[in-house]
Figure (tube, rainbow, N blue to C red):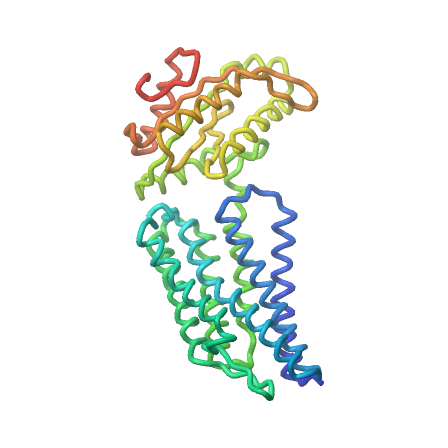
Length: 380
């Protein structure tokens, strides 16, 4: 039979499950381009849902009479699932924070090992528990007991939590006011929930706090509607300026491909506004398809920038040639076709682009060069 305490634990985790599933449904309904950062966040809310379900399932198992061997197997399977997924949350948050702050490119060489090794150690301790019993034990009477290893993995999780907090502190000025509030809200909730459950294991509020905090982050940090061009769904000019400030401040190398539609005035006289925007939407779809690492910005009525972080000059030139070649073909929209004449210019930080003014100056310089093909920086 179930005790009042069991019902309380189930209620807490059922609430966490509902919040997590709500986040998952929201992410499925709202279409967006899935970059690695978005995938990390999706992994976070899926893990929270799995953990909540696992906690509920574990309480149900404990409430039913069954053969000892069956109960022992199910308990161990459930605990392994819970711990292995739950202690991946902190590393995911740390990695997500790195990407949000734009410092992922600084994690290279031995830093990659330093960032991932503690997580691998904690997962090894959890997955090897059936043999070494480092995390927990379940005796012959099916009584669950924590072992010293659980505190080690909590400490490792705490280190990742501190690492992400350090990144947030160092790059605090990169976040908008609302984003700052969302981050503080999330960290406070997670900290309170974790401390309460560590001190009072019978109060299972950690997952609920994490799920509510994740929902707050999702609504604020994952929603980039204010950065999008309404019709084409490319990033807008303000997004370009904000992102470039991060690139320049932390010296992240990139190449940029400038694209200007030359026959825009003619097309606007021949087509409706809606039809012209449909054509540009197809252009943006093509530019996004080049690589998920590239960001596409609409900086004017007929101008687009494709920012390609950390690629070689050879690859940047090849990408520019591919874009120019595509504009030699027809564009289809609503069952009709149109021709776009475009000027394509490629340049990068290796060419001396070190601030916003220089970026737009190079873009403007390309308009004065005539060439049947993409224009490279040394031709300006």
